[in-house]
Length: 257
Image (cartoon, rainbow, N blue to C red; front, top):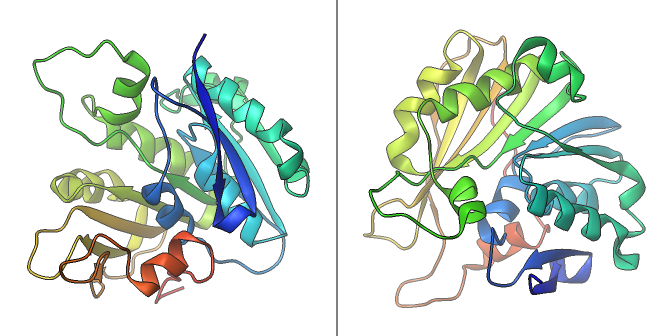
């Protein structure tokens, strides 16, 4: 039997059931990804590769008119998402969240059959696998699926995102800097007006993540935005601004609309 934990996010505004030692556990990446979404009024969002639902629930807890679809291929992680939605602590948001256990990379009719509607979502968020595959094997296949990039991963994920988004819908993703060219190439002729924010552990260190947003069908110029430093110098603690992002107190809204 897999051990699990129940973890608080956004200072107790929602909770996540997660595996303790096997599979993928969500943290900072999912919370910062969620901070890229800022919308007024009712909207629909798809969280592709949702895991136990961290990023999608973070959006729902902050924006009370958000309707969220979690999409997760792994049966194990989809079951954790189901457990998460059944928690009494999440009863105030769970009615606005649904789950599909399905493969993000499906195409055409097969994608529609599992429940992913074309041209429906206002926002799509994703945290695709972005570690390069090595020759070593891991016994944790669930973690490998969540973390390890396979050939054309970004092309396939962004293809699906574009298909299910409304015209002018917003794509938001988090990735490693070495994946930037793949992300930009996958967005070409699909998603434009890209805005890229590099995340650095500290000043003087190399970037560890990039945040990318773009709009379906738009042709605006690419904008490289000012960097975000996660930690103060000589500190393991998050900066005040990053702490606010992680806890849902502020957002990283787009510059261009």
